[in-house]
Length: 617
Image (cartoon, rainbow, N blue to C red; front, side, top):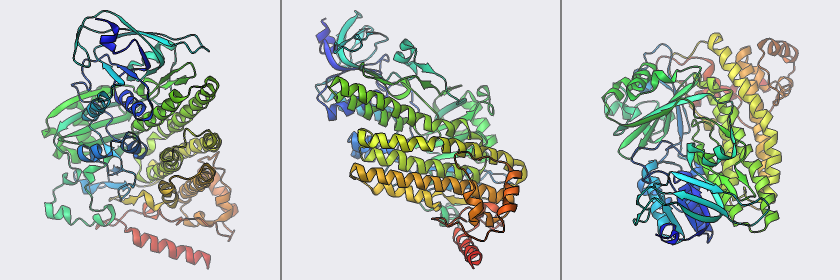
């Protein structure tokens, strides 16, 4: 057969290597936003494959990308679960933790106004492929294990050459084919081959990062409902007093994280099944101890005893794991008209579900580059976009490499997550929903402001890690569960307001971003002061102006003796530091709750306000 009969044409505007989530989403975005022709090459015989695919949790940026940018909103609402945010749980001292109500909980109570989804990757990717195949400009070939690319000479507009040898059998469109090599040309070649890293390997772009984590995951039949991991009757579950704090929406709709030092266990609902996964610092857990569903189930039931009520009886559907999963890449886009997206380029850690976010951002920048015909403009864009891609990626790295141990304490982690979520809402979601990442006027300002956060971010992560290590031996853990809504921290509420700043001009967007950077500086200062107030055992630290203003948030140093010396110097200062939110919001973590139940948020807030009035007087 001729090349035309097999690949549809001897020339395609874009050849995409790899038909996973990144490649299928990029194809759909190109089909929606351009008139380009696309050839998608996949080494596997089936799209999606017969084995279950991991990476189901999405957050706001990716939810917006899949729903609005790729125009899949109705499909997602009908066929995938809407996600109830991320929720985190910790065991309580003095309890056997065999019941869900034994665990302390940190969460966001309302649904997000920008919806996100729990995605069955297999059915979702199948739908993406189905819709792409409706376009005459899209061709997909499976069972293509051997691919060679010859890139055009730099500085020319000559097309690239891609040669591939499909296995004998059925082509993507259903016609029979033999295994003769085929050659096509393309203006752009994009690698979305996942961990095969086709282009990164060939070009010597693979790089290590600081993250040393592993993971094992498996799927079981049916719904693992965490609210039912209890002795309580159905009526008692409905009447639990903790619902005053956690709300009435089903906890199982969240991406649920059960946390301990340097590790967490996920529970994610899918249609007809539940995804389970353990992620860990390799210094804390040996991958060999959790490398099968049987081993992982036993390990999880010992670490988080409530799951012994459920998981041993479940039928395992599929499983997989990686002893090491995180890596960097030297470059992911070039004006020589090639790019990498998804796991073909960089990957950090699944803790906050950033994988689909990075796909969304990278794909958007790649599509904009492909739209660009002028060579000089393309060179300028690709240089800026590579800086942007690297900055976005590197901003995540300290989160996972520096302070993963803080997962072991509810207070330390709640401060950590509130910080990271505030960065995410203002610095990632807000620009993305306003199409600002492809606006050079905004992007230059964004890079300047974002670079200011880099040293502060690492400083905060190191400070919280050191605080956690100190707290392990210096402070007794709570003997009962504590409940905390991340949105009680005013900085996070302020960042969430940017969700409603849509269609703003670039000048206003820059001003909003600048205000949010100031908001983050205040939050970093609050984290430093909150930690010091616990170390020093004195809440007055939080409102002592000279003490609070003495923190350099770019160079936070956890040194209890230095804190004490500085407090002795500042304690007599009666001038108050005025925060933009309640500085006593973390008070419930100072004392353990009574056996009868958790500290009530409203009581804590009232006491804190009374304390502040007394100090003011």
